[in-house]
Image 1: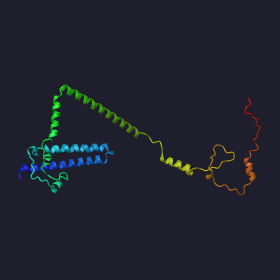
Image 2: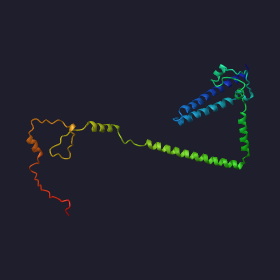
Image 3: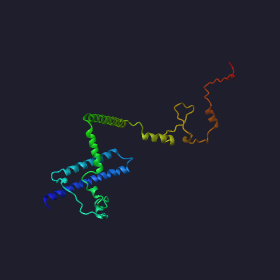
Image 4: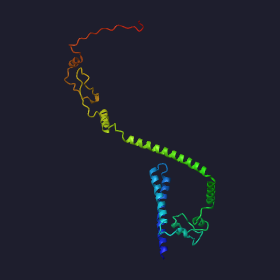
Length: 252
């Protein structure tokens, strides 16, 4: 094996490694689009797209290196064509090419575009050549305006988004879970509440305790007359009660 053949083999190995990395990135993106189409993360999608772009750039650099022989000077020819299934070819192409027959060889070893695609390309090139420079400049100016307008809309939406995110982050907390739990425990179970009995003729400072929280009062040994006397008004307070005059509904 001479020096040129060794360089050719090393260059093909480097290109093959780049192609495998590119294939894995494209496969991952296709799988993401198929399985996570509705819940796909836009930043992850852009990162994967940037990874594919970097692989393409690396592939172009590997081909354009000085030690890589120009591949355009090489010709690929099929050594054997068969209409039967070739298992070695299936394993080599990961199931994409089962046979290497006369029908598919022109498609896989084609060095020029498909005739129909080539005809459409020629039509587009002729159509573009017939446009005058003034009309082309007008179209370019119009497209630039549209692109600039869309870029302004995206930039404005991004600024509003960043502003909303920053304002939400600066909102102070106005509630406390500990206080909420303490309030619920006090209302529901009377936790941490002080029980005070109302004094006779109690003022507004006394707290009314629910019957369920009042301690049991011993009734034995209590004089009923004393209870009635407590319910009576003190003797030092004079009261003047007058009978109310009857009011007729239709009196003027």
